[in-house]
Image (cartoon, rainbow, N blue to C red; front, side, top):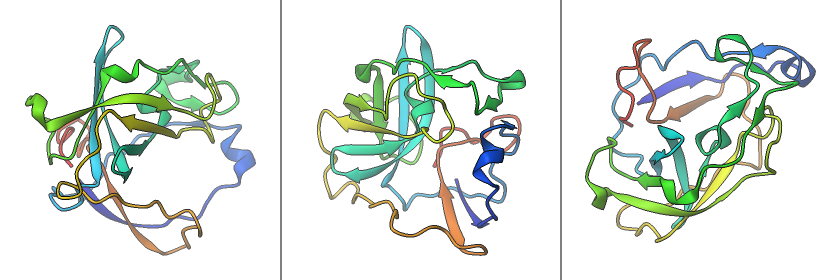
Length: 182
């Protein structure tokens, strides 16, 4: 789903590291996005369960994603929130249990997926806040005719009032509907 959002003012970093953070709102006003195929869906399954997430293809064989997509969260605050002083990532999941697709919806056709061969994170068992980033190295590159990689904008920060796009495979309402569709 794609939502146009206005950039918010940022809270002081010190406050983010002491408060309990909790996501409580789904994307609103979003719509299906068949165009941004470089925003990929991740599906993971294994002995520790399964899950779906989003990422961005940044080279033909590397996906930028969140560490919470590739590792469990330990010491979570009440109601699944994050306490930046104590909440950590657990050990990363086996790379072979993570699959990536450029399709608009996470489906059941194995031919739509590319398997990850490596998971790279800043450092194992780090605090969640400030470290929620990971790279997936894919077993096979995604062909340019299927998706052109997108370089992340890292050279300048968002400005207050700047409009940006949030694209992912997340839920579009409080009941989890829409999850699994870009």
